[in-house]
Length: 330
Image 1 (cartoon, one colour):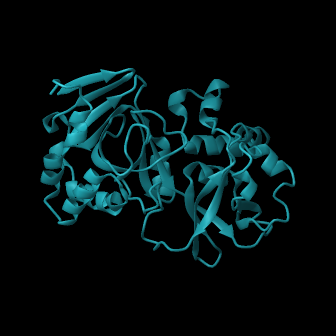
Image 2 (image 1 turned 90 degrees about the vertical axis):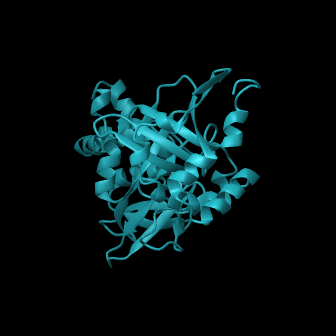
């Protein structure tokens, strides 16, 4: 184990023998996820590693031979959360049951930054008569959480599903409504989950509506019609992500497409090799990660409960790992 600190960032090159549970993991599943996005990594060293991975090597040996785990710390407390692909009930036409629109991106939202806030979008006529409605859903609370997740499916009355993905946002910062409920003294931090928040908003419709306005950020969508139903939604690398093998990270610290070793503590400890294939507006920091739990309500319940500490190591190409260290430190 070799350590090096630069400004407020500390790098520690680890040994695989120190990774808890490394030997027991399904490295082949991680390699399959890695192959899904490694072709899109532009740096020459990643191109070489991707070509080697396509030769179908023994997965565990491949990672151990060409990578070194690096613990990157920025002084912030590590935090692991979960996300999922929600499935909402909706319609392609507005009805008395389906009356909450899922909007496409207005062009001016990309020009004027920040654009109108969530409250202004929903309480003025700025969106009226523009034919930007992709679909209508039956629950404004589920729509709010669809915007947090950034992608999802809408199940239509016919039984077919419409897939939507992130198209852009209004330029306002996201504010956590869970944190706001804690500030107001409604809940203790350990009590807050997505389901708890949803239930509180539904029990308190007037206060709940105002709580949703606490976050001025508003996400717009686009229809996704070129993904097979069995595939996961697209992540930040514009490729399908994989249940329990994809993690959203802060690309300031973790290269998109890189393998990461996760040691999540808490009620249900997790030790797993994942691939950094996504990002998120709330995912900021060297030890901040959001684990993809899959699609639907079951995945949503599991992801919504997750708020644990632990540590994450980035598997970096050997040359890059040791290049982080000053001369003579190896």
